[in-house]
Structures are given as structure tokens and as C-alpha cells.
Image (cartoon, rainbow, N blue to C red; front, side, top):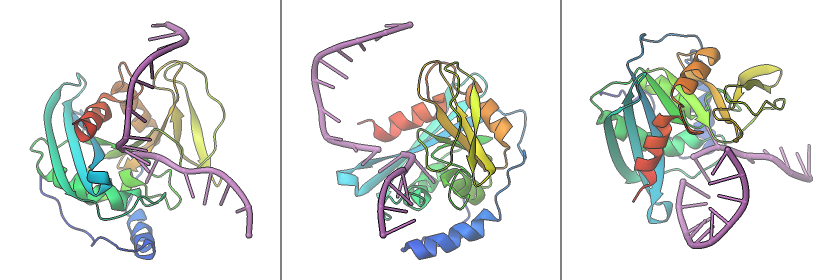
Length: 221
DNA sequence: GCGACAG
DNA sequence: ATCTTGTCGC
């Protein structure tokens, strides 16, 4: 797929903040999807050579049967450090390289990390979604910001994630008895719809099949 | 000023 | 993210 460059990549946190504040105004948290959903994708990053090289992986699966239909890998020098709140500047450049190689355009992309559950409401899922203009969902394995009530051990149960009196996402149990996932709108999708699709992409394990496949491609030898 | 802190 | 073996539990 073709990808439009909507901004240059910053070198400093100050520049990054400016970009986040600008792009945040372009994020849509209402459902604006191409249904029925036929393809869902997972995107993730892995590192080699002591972290100096980034390896991005994208896995496109059919929906709702979740069969792998296409995958791609892309390598590039890591150009931004990991700083909480600025993950997208470190990971998106390589992810775009991998997405450009994809022929099957996904209807939804599940990203590793937060969506609007971010200090400036522009986690990696929102950032990527605005750039490629495809619905995205933030699927994080741990908390960045926000608070929530305890939730039942049963699969499917969830609690709203709150930050500054605002619901920014959901803490979702994708499998009975295991640590929950932090779900939030990335772009062009509502929280409830995001929760629905995440559960439908998670038939057996804690992580959605999409991210499991992408994870494996990005970290495997 | 003191902690918290996606991957 | 990554470095790393065995081990507990369904």
C-alpha cells in the first residue's frame, strides 16, 4: 500500500510533543469502518544488534476466521530512544516500511501499545492510524496512564480506564485468570467496537492472534 | 519536589 | 524491547 508522509520525524522530545498536539486533533474516536471486516492486521517491532536495528512485522489475517493471508518484514536503523509517551516516534518509521510492502489492505490494525490512553491522547495506535488513515486499536500489555477498578477473572469482563475524569480506554480480560490487556481507540473506531473486535481476534490466548503472529515474526530468529 | 512510566 | 531454565498449573 501507498503511504503519505504527513510530517517529518523529530529528533527532540520538544518537537515530538508539537507533532502529537497537532495530530491529536485529527484522531477520530467514532466508528468509521469498512464493514463487514474482511481483514485484520497486527503490527509489532523487534530489535537486533543491541537495539540499533529495528525489525518491523505486519501480519494480515482474514476475519473472522483469523487465517494468515499475508506478512511482511522491514529493517531499518533505530533512530529514536524509548521514552514513555513517545513510543510511536521509535516504532512507526519501521512499521510504515513493512506496511508499504503489504498488498492486502487491512480493515483494522491492532497495534502493540496504547491508543488514546496516552498523556496527550496520541499513543502509537492513534499516530499510526492518522498517518495511514485506517482504523486502529491500541492493545497494550501494561498500563501507561489511568486508573481502574478491579475486574472479574472471567474472560470478556472489563472495566473503564479513567484519566482526568475521562474514559480513555478499557482494561479487558481476554482470557480467564490471566493479566488483562489495556484497550483504547486508535483511530476511526469507538471503544466498545474496539473491545468487540479484540475479543473476536482472541479465541484462545491472552493476546489477539494478530499481535501474536506479528510478535513472533518481529522477535523470532 | 516525588513517583510513574506503552515497548 | 531484551537477557534467560526450569517449573507450576490447567
